[in-house]
Length: 145
Image (cartoon, rainbow, N blue to C red; front, side, top):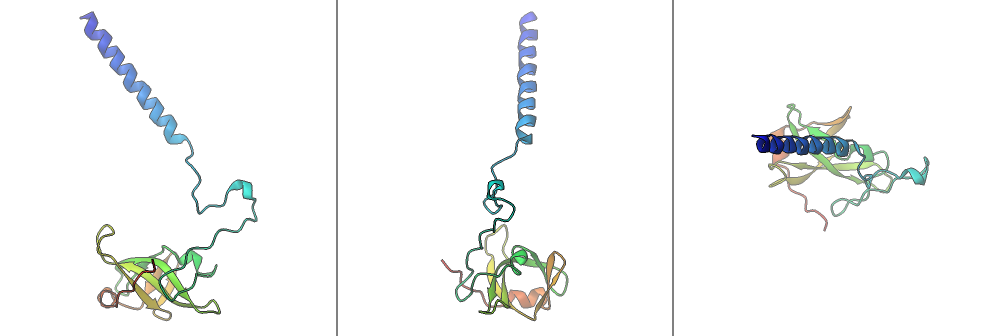
């Protein structure tokens, strides 16, 4: 009987030690994200620009950067995708937004362009002037390699 108690006590100690180790490791800070400027760079460090989008588009200006990865909702209120890139004119004006739509868990999704005038920024989301059905009928953009 004492041998069983000793094994039980050892097992309990291992489980408690593992729980404490997991709690401590969850509180430690991970590596900094590559998009965040390093603290050593100073408060006035400029972030790196995003990569260029699909063919025929230029890099998004600073005013458009906050639109990247925003949720996009159709005129009928359903979420149709997220902003992947922004096409701009030489003067920096937004020509269109490119959204990833459709698919399931990233499979079968398509990249489509929504021209300026067919969307508005609504807080932390983009509101389209198109229904979800109209978005599904838009031609697919080919991504730049």
